[in-house]
Image (cartoon, rainbow, N blue to C red; front, side):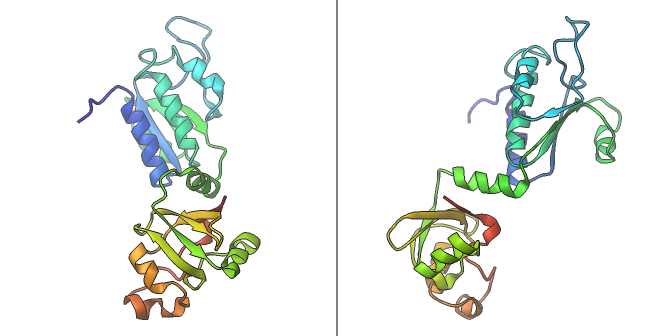
Length: 228
């Protein structure tokens, strides 16, 4: 396996926060939080109580503010906060030896440095889908479904699907194409490709009878679909 490097835990924490759509990420370290400069060298260094995640000035401050400069230091934690903010999660960087730190943070106490996310969680999830590079498959939809998705913001129902392409599982990001092959949207599939082929062109009321179960009445719910 690849060698684990300093800073990987910070990045991993941010990725998990994105995956589970967490409200917040807490990173515990050997510093009380972020300072405007290294407090061991600069007596005028200011403690950063709160800032917007992703502010470029934070990365400049972090270059000498952590337990070491660069990899594994405060910079990796600031970058992790930026990554977590992309999915709508705010981040707290705090001293790991602070008494009952997690309990006190959960109670709303002002501890450490708070980096606020400015992206709404739904918008962040849709941006993630829009940027997703590994599409597992696609569904081709008829003109009626195109109008529902594009003009009315509706969910994609199985009855609007005319073809299923590729091999994908429930929860995979798939493309939605019109009859001319144009990429209309992408979203999270509620059914695997093998199931989607069976319920294509069928009303949602028949899903359970065909599959023996029903996950959702939609192939892709509108909250998990983004137009491209």
